[in-house]
Image (cartoon, rainbow, N blue to C red; front, side, top):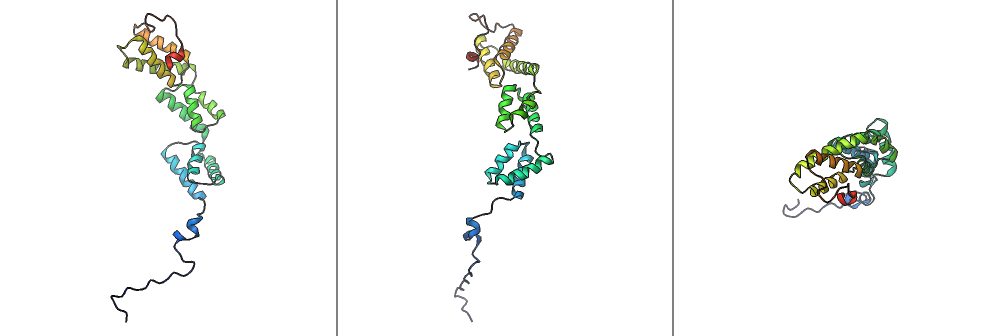
Length: 204
């Protein structure tokens, strides 16, 4: 009969029964499977719409092999879960309506999202010259209200800088700024400048 106060010996593990943390499985793990890739893609799409390139990048961060990612994304495309055309059109509509971005800024954002040039060009056709002028005017009117009382030249520089950051061409921006300030009865050029000035100087 064993002594209760004597610690029991631990039974030695037989060869081949080591815990996984010390075995070959921990040293050489299997690459992520298609199930892992699907889970990553679905989580990304649940959070927000994504382009195919964004989903590929998310999978690459988790070391999903390219061929596995391609197979999963091909199937997602077939069933309509991934659609770069629809994604690009949605992004252009919302960014233009909510943020007032011009075509140049929208094109840059599409590139950052991994949208190809042909798809981007089609999506950008939703915004024409009249749309840009209307958006620029709305933005300039809002900005002008927050700069009331400042020197006309200062107001002009701030309006120009804001519109440049939104991607508006210089001609559109200068036209809208002149109209907005003139509607307030303010001389947009002050007393020293009778012309439109240099766009680079105003927007820099």
